[in-house]
Image (cartoon, rainbow, N blue to C red):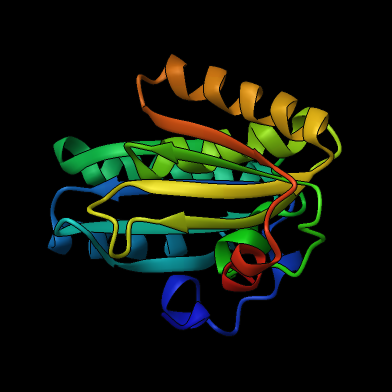
Length: 197
């Protein structure tokens, strides 16, 4: 899958700070209306406004904290009962949006953490929590596409740091009853590393 299929090709990673919002709609038609309302409400950047598995619509946007908050509130209001899930992160980790855009080239020689979640919003929240927990690098955050609506993310670093970051993500995911599985692989094989990046 091309990175531009996940987040618009013209989107620069720096545009995602300091706040990010996400609204998932059960209705595709309503989802487009939500995306339009978000864009009209305040000057946020639409990172993603598209259909996702399993027949939902996802609106992902970023901007200043107040602008993103206003846009988020308007999108949820317009979505009404069609809103399946939502999340707002006022101070998003700097690596989150680049990791959503596609695999980042980071050192994979130590440990790799993988966290799999039931929903898109929970994946974004858990990935942000993991990245903020300690000195790890987000490698990739994969959302919904070809995943049946689920999500997962990969992070790398020293084994202890990866374990701590995964634990923070698991705690965040369990608060939303969204955890599917978490794994930490020490000393990742070079063969697998090649497939990841």
